[in-house]
Length: 325
Image (cartoon, rainbow, N blue to C red; front, side, top):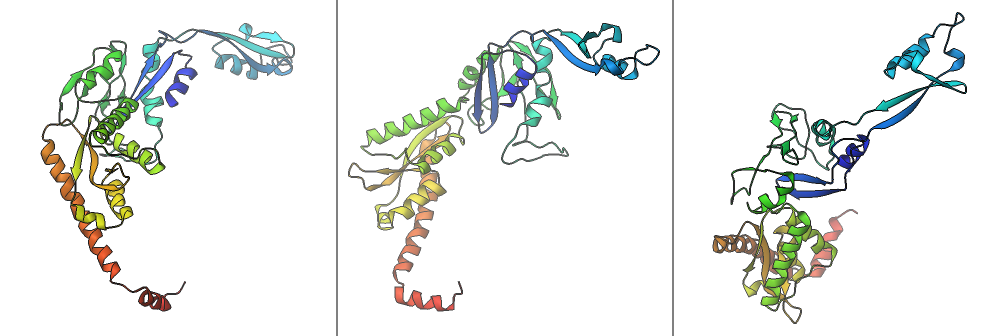
């Protein structure tokens, strides 16, 4: 919204703003941007005719100050009724010149739920700024923010393509990054995650919950943790199914960001689906690592569940005598 407001305030017309986001980058692509802002004629109301001149017929300080502020002389003003007006023609400004203000007028004024600062700067942003890409078609729009200068280079996936990449044209941004293992379109990335999870579920005759609020939030969170998603299946020992389902689901979904799966009969299965930030290379180690972390949580859950079962409800009620509500 801040960018669209900025463009509208500067009378720089556009057709559409496409938003991109990943854990490492925020970007927008403005389509149909005008080459320059619209020229306009403006009429500004000035002082009353009663105070425009002094007793000797000279222009008053009030009218001189007003005309000077409008870049005119008192003789350029037009009397309409009881007031003087300034008629101004404001010429269009090149898009390149307007966009050079994006750093100060848009990026620095973005609002987030949480902020951080780094180095010796007082500047606040959601994360430290490492690089900036700013292009008008194929031309770099130069501006600086802190010690970072906007250019035409970015970086690919942190592990799969951690190299400097040149963006030749603004419209190439999404495709160039996709070729370097970064899906910048959050909507497309979320759809890809859903597609992969559903394909795994169908292949194994499982069902996966997507519709309720908690799983909608889980999908959104996972989507914002990865730039190049690859879903995989992990498993755990069936003995843990003796623990209440709610406990198992909490360990998987809330603690580990896993999607629990159910059998065709609607029973919780000893498996889970997760999403890694990368491709399928070395997936065996990824699966083992995730299973190991989950087992540690399930061991704790099983232990406390068994310990709770040893307790007598009558004895627990007696303990309430020492509690003041």
